[in-house]
Image (tube, rainbow over all chains, first blue to last red; front, side, top):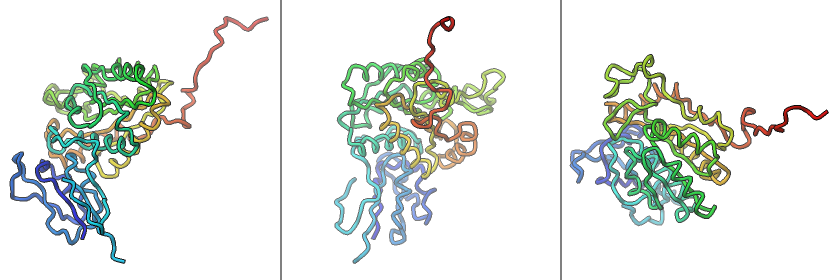
Length: 72
Length: 271
């Protein structure tokens, strides 16, 4: 399964990643991080295509994306 | 942050190791973070981390020395190209020297330094972030502020009858003979970010041939008073028509006007 690792303590909830996700999988969570922002979270990782756009536009460099290799 | 990679997956995107783990002090959505990351990625890809020296400006990015894991010198306001000139001329020629400057630093108080460094053809790379406002000092009018744009020192909008139009640095530098790369990119979209990274890479690669200059249109959501996602739309709608995203100068495509002029310095032809 594709993985998106979000460093929640870096997140400042600017929502740039939310705006570029074509599948609209990223949203602002209810929890608070160390800075006092509501960090983003990926709510349906099954649908993620690991396109990497969220990581590309993240000003904090707080997102890493890993794509699962196809079996066989 | 970096988790162990499972054997059955490949990395699409990971934070570059040329950036330190220090948390950025910039406002939410500020494109300084993207510009920092692009430069760091280029340094990592070219494998020049141990040979790179950065020069930081005065402005929001005055603390950029905390974020790059390379040697950094902090320059006085606007004087980064002059400091970079000294570094370039003293150190061995295989070093890479770049300055990172905002529009309040480069286009106002540093106008003299940047023009003369470009005119001397100093072998440095200048990364110029243009966000049309003074960010650090609280959103005052900058030389690049758009006509009618409201700032704290132009509360009724920039009056071009009094303060003129925004300065277009790329176009101005393009009148000089020596620069080898002058280009403008934008950090407003994934496409623009990818193009900006290519421009930065090209600038670093051409650096040892001469002066390279990359302008990046950036956002200042706090100074503009809009959300980060609206700020990139505002940039695309209002800034790019006046600041066209072009490569103005590159080797092999030098404009006729920049052919080097070599007069014979005589009064008349010999009889």
